[in-house]
Each structure stands twice: as C-alpha cells, then as structure tokens.
Length: 203
Ligand SMILES: [Ca+2]
Ligand SMILES: [Ca+2]
Ligand SMILES: [Ca+2]
Ligand SMILES: [Ca+2]
Image (cartoon, rainbow, N blue to C red; front, side, top):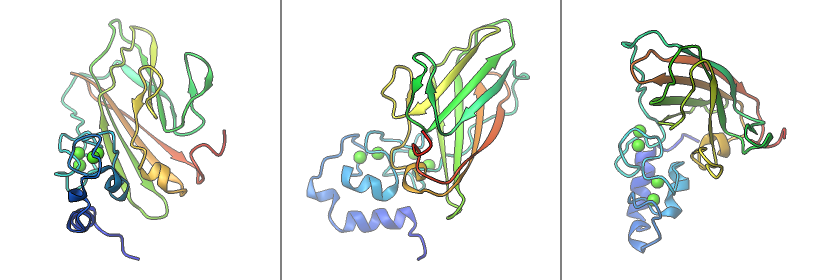
C-alpha cells in the first residue's frame, strides 16, 4: 500500500470531523489527541519535531530540517557512546527507558552549554526518515563528560521522545544519525544502527 502523506491524512482526519468532535487536545496544537498517533506525532508536544512549526501547521510534523551550522570554531567536544537501546541511567546505574542516549566528552578548559541535538531515524523496511531537533539543558564540564538522554522524559533532566515515532511503531532496524553542536562551535556527528525488534526486547 502506498503510504498516505501526512498532510493528506490530516485533511482526512479533519474532514471526518474529529477536530470538531471536541476531542481532547492536551498540547493545544489543534490536532486532537486521538489523531496524533495517525500523524505519528506526540500528543503532549505541540511541536513534535522541534522545528518551530506546530504539528497542525507543519507539513512534515516529524521531519525537522537540519539546524547545524558549520561556521563556528572547531569543537572542543566529541561524542562517546551513542546508544539507541539497552539504555542505563547514569545516576542510578539501573535500566532506563530506551530511545537515545549520547555521551559527550569536553576536552576543553571551559564548561560548555547551549547545546543543540539533531537526530534522525531511518526505517530499514519502509525507508521512512524522521528527524528531530532538541535543545538539551546539559552542561558538559571542562575536561569532563555528560550525557543527553532522550526517552520517556520521566527521569530528571531526561528529554521526552515522540511516543508515536517509527522507533516505537516499527520493529524494523533503524539507521540513526546524531549531530551535536554547542553555540559558537562546529557540530560533531555519529551514526549508529539499531537492530530489528522492539525497543525493550533486548533488556
Ligand atoms: Ca494535540
Ligand atoms: Ca502534538
Ligand atoms: Ca514541527
Ligand atoms: Ca517539520
């Protein structure tokens, strides 16, 4: 079956009267909670992909354009582990909800903040790609390291991932790209492969 373009799907949903059925809209983006899974968007986030356009207005609500800029100074930071399954909470060393965990090393003499994270998931079966922009509040100490966790967002300082992402809805393998940039510096990138299977099956 040919995939239905999200804009077409949303038009169908809206013309079917779901928006006017006064269904709840928890995040106030104009897309009823019941319709958000059909768009693969987050019912608790008005701008699921973080590109500044809310889910109703966004023609590609789970595809954010690449915000990285190459003009900055050479990065004093580098990526360590990039995990897309079997995540562990660094504070408690206990199992954390899977999605994305990124370790950043700061080799410079100053603490670093003002990070932007851009990541993509490409589904090995469908070829579909999702792309998200997040702005983690992480501070990476001078000559130290820190981690960015993107998951269900319930643990302190963890960021919320889209619960209706193809990460969750498709069991196919995923090709994942990650780019991390602190204000004024060039980005660093990594790629990682997620095996086929459910997000938590290997735990
Ligand atoms: Ca909504
Ligand atoms: Ca939403
Ligand atoms: Ca958006
Ligand atoms: Ca978008």
